[in-house]
Length: 300
Image (cartoon, rainbow, N blue to C red):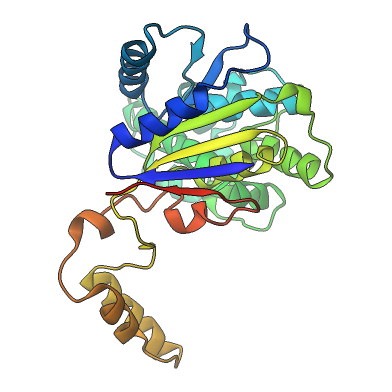
């Protein structure tokens, strides 16, 4: 089951989490899994747990990407490390494609940029930029990468990615596709899943990570402790500039202008701390799309 706990205070989220952790796991030798967004949060939690309970032991604090990788490794029988698609490795692989024996087949846009690259410096920096872009695509646009591999797009990025993915080693987008297939078939291995998972203090998550968490929540307990600036639904809140773009879009599509609804619901004053929150991850609107939601509210 997927549980959602929301508050604008970490202390409130921590208190609720400790109530849950007071119920021990069935196997005392299995570490408690608490997914955090950075190591600073892991240290803060360790100190708070030790202060609260007198000891902080047998705790595992993976980052979201590492935790999702473990899930894939447990369900798909793949090694936990696929170095060929780590960002630093991709940089060198892309550099080899840009400057090596296959340089003649480099897409035209990239080749024209490298025309006057006598010392290879531009190729090195371009490879770093492309590797960073592909790494982001693997997290936020996996379906697009799979479409590229099917040949639906012939842009220079798609052609370059096709060369990168031509080997036998699967990448994260391919593993996600396999995981989805296994999940939809109801064939997930429950024994390979942790008994309980807590995701603590996350203000946003990549949609892919949330999808995996929702998938495993049918077979294990998943608790999302969401640091939320507002107790009410605010995913459709927009700044004045964003609302102006919406109005233009509505006019182009000959749709009814419903901006009055938003003004009536939220008022017309600025709310930069809310609509300025990260938009590249899963927002509270998506977090509520669960099959078995259980929302705990705290005064904020």
